[in-house]
Each structure stands twice: as C-alpha cells, then as structure tokens.
Amino acid sequence: MNDKKLAKEFIAVLDFGGQYNQLIARRIREAGVYSEVIPCNTPFSEYVSPALKGIILTGGPNSVYADDALRCSIEVFSLGVPVLGICYGMQLIAHMLGGKVQTASIPEFGFTDMSVKEHPLFEGIARETVVWMNHNDHVSQLPEGFVSIAGTPHCANAAVANDKQKLYGMQFHPEVNHTRQGFRMLSNFIYNICGCEGSWSAAGLADELIENIRAQVGGSTVVSGLSGGVDSSVASVLVHKAVGSRLTCIFVDHGLLRKNEAQEVMDYFGGRLGLNIIMVDARERFLNKLKGVTDPEQKRKIIGEEFIRVFEEESNKIGADYLVQGTIYPDVIESGFGQAAVIKSHHNVGGLPKDVRFKGIVEPLRMLFKDEVRELGESMGIPRDLVWRQPFPGPGLAIRIIGEITAERLRIVRESDAILREEVAKAGLDKDIWQYFTVFTGVNSVGVMGDERTYDYCIAIRAVTSKDAMTVEFAELPYPLMRTLSSRIINEVPGVNRVVYDITSKPPGTIEWE
Image (tube, rainbow, N blue to C red; front, top):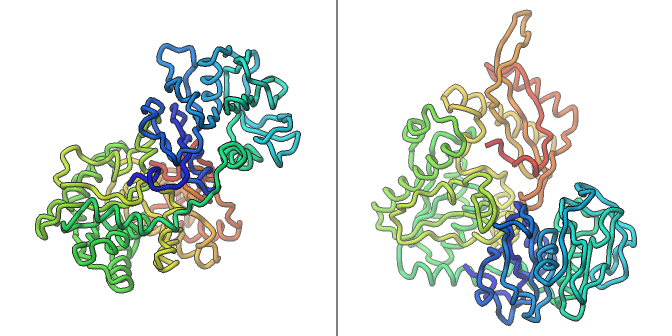
C-alpha cells in the first residue's frame, strides 16, 4: 500500500532516529491529514508530489557536528513546501543554513516553562505554556532570515521561524502529550502554515485497500494468518471482500493461547463472520521448538518462523500463493524501521525468516495505527465487540513468561489471566482499559499460607490505557478490584503467593514485558 500517493494531502515526516518519531505522523493523522514516516536519506523525488503539503524533520540522538550525523538533502529547504524541524530537526536546519549549534550550558530535560510570541504556529496557544524538552545541544545563532518566536529560561531559541522561506523549528517535542498544547501547535503548522484542508480518515480507505489487494494477488488463492485479534481480523475481512472464496483463514493453536481462546476464535469467525477458517493443532510443535529458550528476541523469531512454516505447509495443501498478515504500523516501527532502533521484533515483521516460500505477503494495514484499524473495521460493518476485542500478541503467552516456557508456567499465567479478565469484566472496565494481562515474572518470594512457609512465584498484573499503542499510561484500577484480584489469584492458582501491579508507562517501558 502506498497511501501517500492515494491521499489528497500528505505531510512527509523525515526520520532522523528518534524512537517515537511515529507519534508525529500519528498526531498529523489525528488532525485529519495523511502522514507517513520516511527515512531521512530518501531522495525527495520519491515523496514530492502535488499532494505534498509539508515536511517535518524529526528528533534524533545525534549531534549535527558528529561524523555520522544524519542529514537530508539541502534541496528540501528550497522546494517551496513548508518545513518544520523538531529538536534535532531544528538544529539541523540551523546548521545546514549557516547558523550555529552548540552544547547548552544548561541542558533541558522534561517539563519546561516556555514563553511564546504571536505567530500563526502559536495561534490559540497561551503566551506562557509548558513543553517537553529533551536536548543537550541548542541553536545559539540563528541563520539569516530566522527570528525567535519562543524561549525558555535556558533556551532563547526554543522555536524559530523564517516566514519568507516557510522554514520553522521547535526545540521541544510537540508530538508528546507532555507538551500541553502540542497537538494544537502541530495542527497550526498543517493548517495555518501548510494550508491543508483535513479530509483524510482511515474509515474512507476500505475501497482503495480492497483494490490494492486485488492488484497485488490477481486471481491467486490466498491464506490468512488469523489470530482472532482486531488486526488480523480486519485484514482478513478486507481480503475476503477483495477475493471472496479464494481466501482461506488459518488459525494456529500454538499452545500459547489464553484459556478457551481456540474454541472462541473458531466459533466467532466461522460462525458470526462466515469466513472459511481451519484450525491447525501445532501445540507440541511450538513448545518443542521453544524448550530451553529464555531470550525474548529468540522466542519471537522462533515463533515467527514456525508460524510461517505452518502457513506454508497448509497453503501447499490448497495451492495458495499469498499470505495475509495483520501487520500494523507500530509493529513495523518497533521491529526497526528507517533510522529507528529495534525495540522488539514482532513475529510478523522482524521475526519472519528470510526464505519465505510465498509469492508475496499481503499486509493491507501495514501503515495504520491500532485505533485507525478499529475505525476502518467499524466502517466495514465488523461487529463492535470484535473490533474492540482485547489485544493479544501473536507470540501469545510466550512473551508473558519471563524465562523458559514450560507447561507449568503456562498453566499459571493462563489461569491468572482468566481471573483478571473475568474480574475486569465484572467491574465494567473491560471497554475502558486498552489492554490488561498477567505476567509470569519468574521471581520466587517467601510467603505464609496456612501457617506454613511458602517459596512460590510472583505474578505481575499489567493494565494500560492508550489510543495508539505508541504511548501508554498504567490504568488506575480501583483498590477493591486489585484486592479481589490478589486474593483470587493467590487462592485459586497453585504455585503463586504474591501479586504485584506494574505502574510503568510507555516510554520508558513497553506494553508487554518481552
């Protein structure tokens, strides 16, 4: 899929290695304009088109003076298209156009008070606001034609502008929620500066995606790796609309599923959605491959390869040439994209083997965020309870067990997770919490049960709120619910004597523990 050519308006986000640069694209999309992250060294001829309305240069870990400093072509600044540099992106603009960047005498990290001047970038922004800073270097001397339009106590050039050349910079990060009016600032850039109209939404993509699928697969037979989650479900429905009976959905029971998961998926998709679906029992196969493996990246890669091999074997039986996967944009980013570091390989991206024996992989949702997938699913009439089904990772419980995977550890995390899901639903919070699950920590602790000393396992509960899976906050569960969860898990799951609650946000953590 190449949405930037399909979109009427397009903002290019040039990636300079900041780990959460995709948030910039996400915020632009939220404002109603299509945006996509592009490696910074991409020739501008590949993304310049009549639809291109603006360019954003992202943050990154480099110094502009470093030998390995990432750069874009200087022609980017003379295309006549507005350019906004964020953090490193702003420093790069200054450096490449004759300004000076130096190490700040007082670096700024975290919440920072900022004063702003009247400017279209700051329309509707309070003259005194709070932004999120994360920099050691700063622009100490502006290039010719630039003026400062915002400052902090330690950074006189917190935001700069060259209105004649349509070049702008922000030393802070408007894409993160910590910048209180950051979304408004980005909206001001795309509407006040770039002149966008804001007509893009994921809900309107179905017809275009279906045509893309038909163009890719032609008259071939297709198989879909259906997990039961919203991503693979929406992808499968899209492909079914494109190719009809030439699609066969394959559900793999790898032995790493939640309690009663396999039967629920088969009943739902075969019954309610009417898809042609078969189930493959591969429990013994996966568990044998994972025996003795403790490294999380190795787990993901083993699972990714075994998924592919099962799909290959089943597709050979029916003569399928293409494999459908529910890959979404965060999967791509976290698996290593452009200049970003690999956070964790997703089984359907970084976990794929190099020798895949399919003519092609069909990934219609590859450039969409989770909430956009849900929006698309609802627009196609997929039942809301399926669209908003609790996310469950492809590697399943394998990445919710720290250390080696064994039948006993699977039993503990499966039973504790079932209790969590039951009690969250009882509390009426199952639609309010983005994702919730239990983790087998692998940690033993001393306890007292029935006046006897125990030395059993500790289970962690993870519950988070989010819009896009890129940033999350821990869910503030009611204390009575937490008390019930602790009591039930300890009393009903043999081998557990302690329950803890994970209060880590993302960043610095991730949603899953592995």
